[in-house]
Length: 91
Image (tube, rainbow, N blue to C red):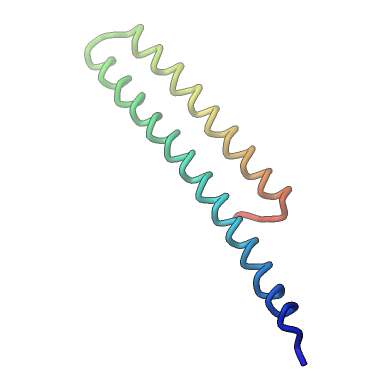
């Protein structure tokens, strides 16, 4: 006869790992949505500054946009590597 505790573990353990992976992906998605939102805000502000001949302000926004893009790339790489090291694979 099949041991109920063993059967329970067989079904529960994969569910826990799938749940953990889903939560990790969700947290990555929320973080990236915040980065994209901030990036769009700066792009619109840069465009507005260029249209109103505020060159210094547009250059400051350009630097800020570059910094955000770099942060986003680093964030994606760091999260992707952490998911691979923990045994999960995205993609």
